[in-house]
Image (cartoon, rainbow, N blue to C red):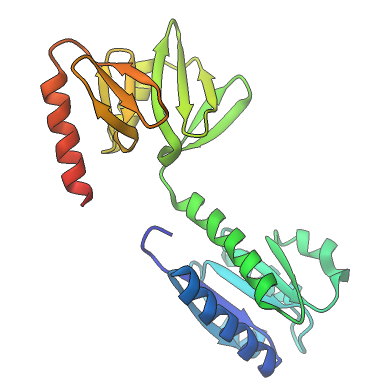
Length: 243
């Protein structure tokens, strides 16, 4: 979550359940060293009277509550917050279909156990972190693809195509002009242009030789003539910034 704490609201009319969840959350925060702030609420009315758009990143809502149940509470939250994650706590899976209408991301069956909550939180933390990470959307032969910049090792201009090489080994091919790609990526401090046809993510540099760079993905990328010293300087400055 990029150094910013994930804010969680937990709403359950059962005080024992709230205590149990809080205790599991405390363990999760400690064991995962996770940046999380949470607040507990005994009723949906109490939660809705204090929350506003963007107040929380994740709502853990008990489905069966007096007055206002979890599904209605989620609808209310969705009226002012379309992006927060919503997960339901329930002793019965019968509301699964209704939960789709409010775009619930998870379903945690009661009694909430350490295993179930850890599993759900790992999943949610992962997706929130991905949403907050710098990314670019490119139009490839497979349609629109979102690329996380942290996973983009290097980019190559080949004929009239641009090929994105991901750290996973996956390649994404597009037909956008390389100059536009350079403009977008060089705005992010981690990318450097080594050659008129190559951009490299400096996080992936393994070593710099006189005429080429070896990446951690074991790919060798050429350096334009007479640019080696300048590239070494840029890389050193980049590493100093990161420390």
